[in-house]
Length: 337
Image 1 (cartoon, rainbow, N blue to C red):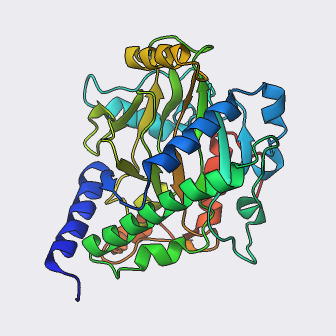
Image 2 (cartoon, helix red, strand yellow):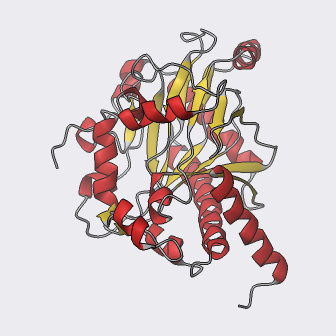
């Protein structure tokens, strides 16, 4: 009730954008370009190491939820999901994603951001971070950029809640002690250079909200809620937020999890040639953070979305169980839990 009229209007803009498109562009003065550049520089060097060095940071026993995930490991959910195949058939003509041949040709690194719960039924999803050897400023660089991203997406969640007509902390209370991860991907553009090849096949994210900084390489495409596709161009100094599957659950499907892909385009290859000319590693690094509902919290439609029909369509489920279900689908976990 004490919100200024302009602040409330901004919250309503965020909510409307998520409802209409599953996306919102933010500008947050706390997020510094210098921190982003330091992060990208370090991750380009990390991914440019020999595969054997990166694989020392692999933790398949923890479902790859900390440390590195090698290329050709994660399978886009739309490769095996009948629901995804149906969604593709329902897209307007000319808005189809690139065909998915198999597992994504991208590496990824998961670095935990924020405090962990002292006790959880889902210890594997809340493990301690893996710190690579040979990068003395790793923790400082990752924590600084990741904390800024988490602050920004937390503010977005609070604004969305107000705009939806929820209590202002309705979403951020669920995020408290969540398994938030800074999750850069690395794609080797010396090795993968075929126009139209997906580096990250068509999918939506399993978490609450995903926030992206601006990549040095074009190639990200996103789909609005009406099924139309477009290239993503994040303005300088801004961040892109996309709704994930947990947001779709909490709104009973009113907000759709944002579908997206990363493919090789002419502009991707032009950026790779420029990096080569400047003597930089030729790796496309994404600047991505996944903000989660805490593993032990319950997903179910919240007011004003908690109609009887939506409660039936989205029955109460712990966030940790939802995450594990998706990890099995995308072949990052073989757990039977």
